[in-house]
Image (cartoon, rainbow, N blue to C red; front, side, top):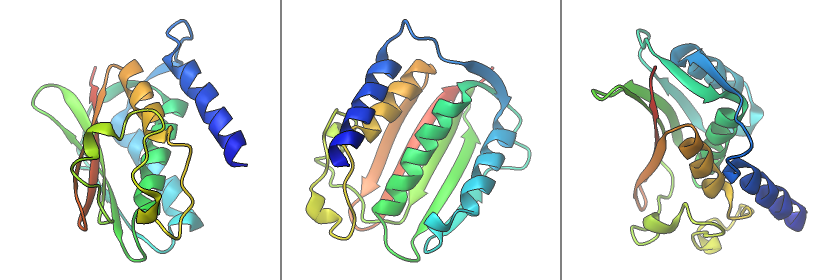
Length: 179
């Protein structure tokens, strides 16, 4: 199963990085997209032991040009990581704010175990995983999840960053241009 997941993730990453393969871009209202996404995951049993929060202003008024399915994959990966690297009753927040520079910053914020500062510069590298001993009750993935996230975000003319404090949690922020 692990080998199959690794092969699937590798193939998906190669496809995403192949610029000859077009993304299915659509202009979408950011608030509607994020609201619908959050409603879908909020009803998912997967997150039943976590506290989920939607912190997006009701008056967020912007349009983003994204491949919807690939953006869902990005958010799913970040939400799953927030779940995997946090304990029962941890908080996971989907946040979005419009920056002064006409960019939408979408953040996944968790109160999980955090990431050591020395590891943060490497987490988007292929097959880089922080020590599996940090998640003793959880299976680790292929190590390609954050590489896939970064590749997708960059193909949508965005960027992704991470801030984290060990023992306090992590914030992954996707910055996308608004149109």
